[in-house]
Length: 325
Image 1: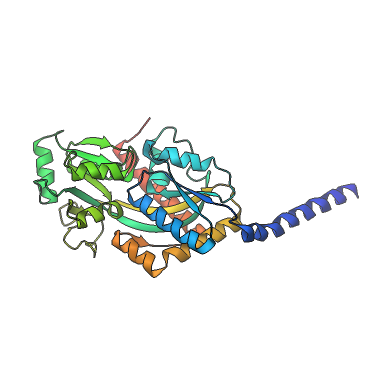
Image 2 (image 1 turned 60 degrees about the vertical axis):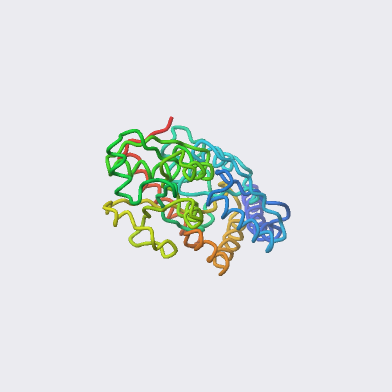
């Protein structure tokens, strides 16, 4: 009887916990939410984060504090998010860099991309755009390749830091073309783009979401974009395939993760709100202007996507023998 009584108490406790989960979601959020962005202000990740923060505040009446924590190829901010309390009040602007690249490049990234996080949703995808200063002498992808081959080690490429999408995209480009270019890492795409526009660095292969506004403003010239066809909003920019690199493939994505252990009911509520936001006509249009395509899927679908991306980029990193200690 004593064993049965103990079992009954365990069952009652378990039922109480299960019944309490919807109540937790109903009460959430009742205080500000911190959105950690492992990038500095100015890039596509930061821009999208602030759009989301504004919309969540309008809908839920709670402030979303955008907390920029750049550095170490996105691992500083991402590791900070992994250690946060799993209560839904800290989430992270994740990406191909935070979850598919950096954990496989850095010997000690400070987190496990799968074990330390709960997937919320894939927000958007974006191609990679190779751009140069509008004042640069190169008019095409072939011009840049020929100049790099003629003067090995003279031309340079910027990135948002070691292990970020611009770094890997340029490393793949160099491997496929056989050019030698100097890598100039920054603490995010914002400052990297500024120096490319000023002609301090030759080129950058950044997310189209980050680089497109500067191409449209006339401060940069887009010379190639990833994908099977030209991007509708940048019809003048040829694809890498048109430039002769038929098998060059690189793309980026923006997403939201929460610390592992965040209650499923809160994950569900966050997912529903974020999917609602990215499907708003004005947000889809804003994403389109940034050369990003809105997605918004379930946590389960997003989990499958991330695991596939880890395999994909792991093969690239291994093939190029890239490692950051």
